[in-house]
Image (cartoon, rainbow, N blue to C red):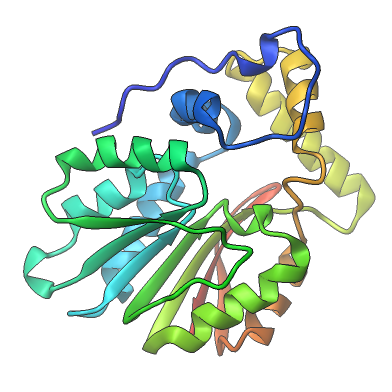
Length: 244
């Protein structure tokens, strides 16, 4: 099922670091990068699929905002009942990622429509019963997060839901540093050097902006969702389920 992904050695290169971008170089190693950088990544993908299967309504749509290489869309296409009339949409602002998605979805048994959209701008959500955002909201500018989630909440069908998985932080400094230390050790255990970890962290500075569990839950409720709860947490990563 997985598309071919090269080994991530991007931050071994001896060059001046700039802001992290979802460009072609990143797209080519993205699956390896995720597997070695994001704890419980595959398990969270499976959880997202299970939630979609439980919550998606017949003859509606599922949107994957920040679909990257299309792996979640493919898993959804292989898991949902084709007779339920569910349409799949993948949205990303990176043309390189969408090209990877197109190749991934050549294996899909049902059509998936891909849209190139910057989530800092308004996106049209149509007839959706589930919207998934896996490690995506953290890259949206903080001032644009509430308008984005309001737009999602207002355009879901009655009883619709949001699945949100994010990198988070703690507002307790000692715990937050421990979470970071544990995450760095996770990366070391999977072959990243301290130099690579440091360079990537610098590249992500002011690009990936995590919020606390409480800040995310407050944001989700402010956007109009009636119910929000955690379904996953690993130190500084968390999964939220929100219901309209």
